[in-house]
Every structure is written in structure tokens, then in C-alpha cells.
Image (cartoon, rainbow, N blue to C red; front, side):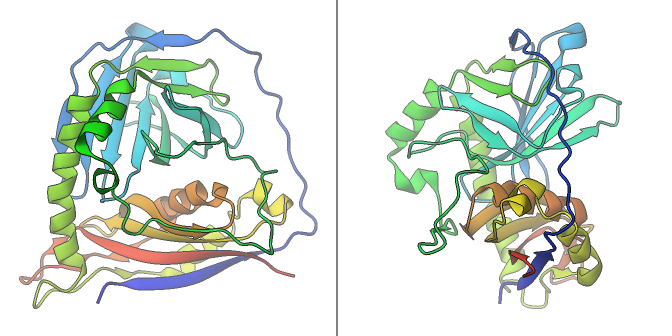
Length: 315
């Protein structure tokens, strides 16, 4: 049986004040060309393609990670151009697609370089995409739901169509949240993506075995200190959605590594505003702790773990 848990988050509305920070003035776009080849790395719990862009103080490293079978990827940018991000979201686009607002984590690398990470970014879509704004509210009488549990871009379209759309991608752009808009010229993107997908297929097969009881004497991953870290997630109800009195339910699938940390997260289904999705994954990756899965010999192994997060406002 696959591990699956559900917990609810509630938040009080009264007594909260919004803090607004003026955004910096508009700056010219920073266009960065590749300065290295694409590189594929296969880890025990994820697959990654990476490439460097720009030089000297404008040098920027791009990581594109996948840790499961869904259509999304995690994006990490490392370098001075992503220093001091502001606001709750940045806007990203795999051009020529339209920009979409995304939550992010800002941090420092082991070498002291600024880091900007976003979760669940979809390089290509097969429906028109729209920016997700707080005022785009759902009608409570007609709750909309989306189930992505079995989503697979390769099964939804022909291989020719899939390759055509990846071939059409020219850049990865970041704006409205960084000091200056950034455009990374990706170059030949399709061959790198094909390597990433092949790596992810093998990874998914291996992690599924550790998660669904295939190991006769093994054990799946289980939450560790659930009450403690669920409280931390509860304390971070997205403020702009709380202010609009928005609620949601988000199903997530995480990749849990051998030391019990969630190293990858993707949304499998949701009801309510999609803005909750980024926040759900961001907070699970930051706070969730697990007892790792064990193989037949009792050794820790990476695995999948699924749960549902309910965002509810206390009435």
C-alpha cells in the first residue's frame, strides 16, 4: 500500500496587516548566452540537466531537476543576477510561452552565491496559459478540480509534436521580482530534455518499487514529527490568499531521499486557486521530515510519498 496522509491547515483572518514594499524601478533586460554545454547528472533521488550562462559578475547557473513522472520541473538559478529578489512571486516563461507568476525560495549556495528556486514549472503546455493572480477567484458554487496523478506529456501527444514544441523554446525568462529582467538563451534545448526524460523514466521505476510494497521485506517512508512540521506549514498560510479568504486542497507527491528529506515535489491534484500549489510544495520541501523507505536488506532508499494538504480559514 502506498503511504498517504492528509492534514489540514487553518488560519485566523482577523488582526493581520499587509506590508507593502516598493519595487525597484524598471531595468533593462539582462540577456545571457550559454558559456558551457548542457550537463546531465543522475542522482539517487532526482535527475538534473544544467548549463552556465554569462560571464564574470553576470555568470548564472541553471539547474533543471525532475524527481518524478509528472510534467513539471524544479528550476534553480544560482548567481549574482538573482540577488535580492522582492515580493511574493517572480514571473517565469519558457519563451515563447507567456509568463506565469510563481512563488520562490531565495537562499545562498555553498559558495555564497545567491540562489532562486521555483517548483512545479512546466516547460511546455498544451492549453493556453494565463498568469495566476490573487483576484482571479473561483466561484464557490462551482468548485473547479484538476487531477494530474497520471499526467504524462509523452502519452498525451505524439513524439513529433512533443519534440516540435521543445524545439520551439528559445529562452528561459525571469521578470517582476528580480532586480533586472533575465533572459537565458537556452540554445539546443531538445537534446538535453530528452536526456532528462530518459533519466527520469528509470528513476521513476526505481522509486516506485520502494514505495508500493514491491520490496517483500522492505518498508515505505513514513512521516517523522508530523505534528511539529505541520504546525510550521500552518503558520505560513499564503498571506495574499488569506487576505482574499481563499481556500484549497492540494495533493502532492514528494521524492523522499535516503536521509528522510523531501528533495522533489510535484502537485498531483488540486481544487481551489492554483496559487496554493507552489506554496504547498515549497513548504513541504522546507519543513517535512520522514523516516526513509528501507529495502529488503534494511538499507535506506529513496521513494515516493503522497499526501493531501487542506488550506482552510477558521470561521
